[in-house]
Amino acid sequence: MQKIAFGAMAIAFGLLAATAAQAQMKVTSDEIKNGAVSPKSMEANVFGCDGGNVSPSLKLTGVPEGTKSFAIILFDPDAPTGPPPDGRRGFWHWIAFNIPASSTSIPKNAGDVKANLMPAGVIQARNSYGFDGFGGTCPPKGDKAHRYILTVHAVDEDKLAFAKDDMVAPEVVGFETHFHSKAVAELHWTYARPK
Image 1 (cartoon, rainbow, N blue to C red):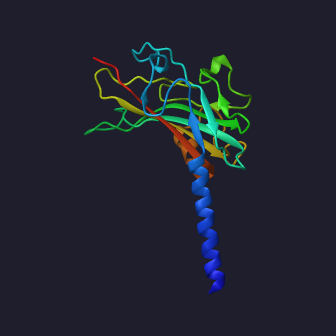
Image 2 (image 1 turned 45 degrees about the vertical axis):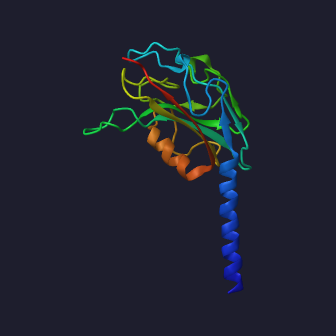
Image 3 (image 1 turned 180 degrees about the horizontal axis):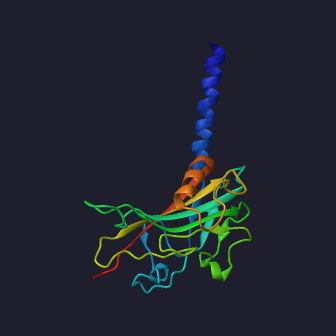
């Protein structure tokens, strides 16, 4: 009975430690504050949008021990891409993975694959626009402000096992990071375009 009690306590402490690790890791940016409206520079330059398509700088703190790499996923849950009646399913704006654990700072515009600002070996997969790297905000004109959720995963693998190249589906990256994240940090913002 005593062994069971100690085992339960060990599990509870392990869960508390994992929760604490997730609570400690934070992501911040010089270009966008959590909960703010994103600037025009982060708007896309496709689909009728005319922004700068510049990805924000990112800084990570409180990274848990044992982190081997990072993955970045930027998603708009409000994009009208699904079937009726509400037409909401979402849009993938940025998927980057195999970022070395030593890279706790990502420079502004690193989402532009041609700028070559990411460390060697990082894969920036195809976004919902159909090109590799960062695709900025571009909600339909007159639509409500869309929510943008940037998630950074602290991954326990040097390289994702199933995501092999830039053609990987975002859902595969999301599936794999779900099972291999030691901690997760999020940055949220909104953006709308007037009619």
